Length: 318
Image (cartoon, rainbow, N blue to C red; front, side, top):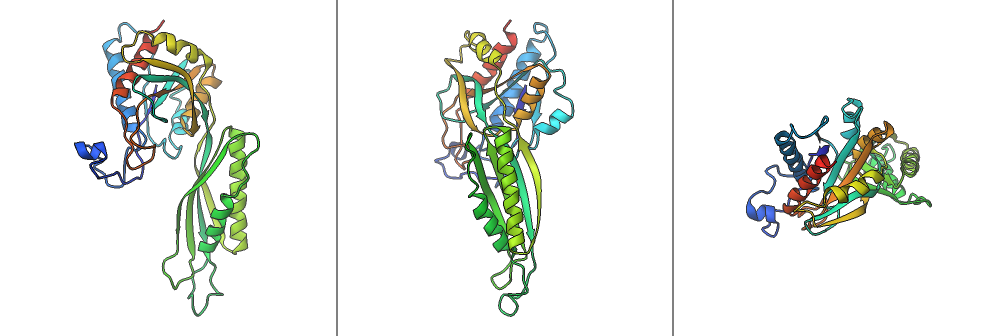
């Protein structure tokens, strides 16, 4: 079982309209916020750990609980897989709070449309110069990066399925009278399949290199995170509604939800499946005060009992 635990570089809402601010449990770290529910995921992991500890004489088999850092940016799961912690695993359970608003008590047995993704950092290096006396001597990294941003967002969508691209950060220059010699971008690509994300990544790199060539600056880029496409096994789509039927906390079980986002848990799912094991990614329903990655994001803590109950019933079900 895997539980992601990281936060996001977002300044959390301080106004009392935001329940965590009103009740005094807003983030203590300014500029960092659990804006995706991972604090809840960590809590769910502790809850199921307590369940296993209390019933270890009744349960059979070996149980591994992974509290994974660095899901945001798709950097953590692949490292866990490479450490060998998922070698020989028969069944892999994971999930997420929210995604879309649902009443507490709602459970989705699996997920579809977990998009493959690539996270890229790109640095343009030109040459600073006096903007009045020697503009012709400078090599404008800001213009190169600006051209790259516009052209990245003009990549043609793939005709065989959904693709995405977003430039989320752009830094350049040091003063109004200086030709900018440096610029930095952080962006991501996504695709409904690993192949379609590869198309987006290749097109993105081509545009980075083209913009650098056009403005005669150097380009250096790095792949800083990646995620694959993956699907929940049909075994769990059949098992979970039966296993959770006696839960007092789960009132409504659905088959699958379309995520249309990315999750590096796919590295773990694929690794288990390639070895002949089975994997699932559930969704635990909750109302949402605002969308994921928003400064007012919040979820209903009643969903914690739903998630722990679902995992416990799956473990105990014959």
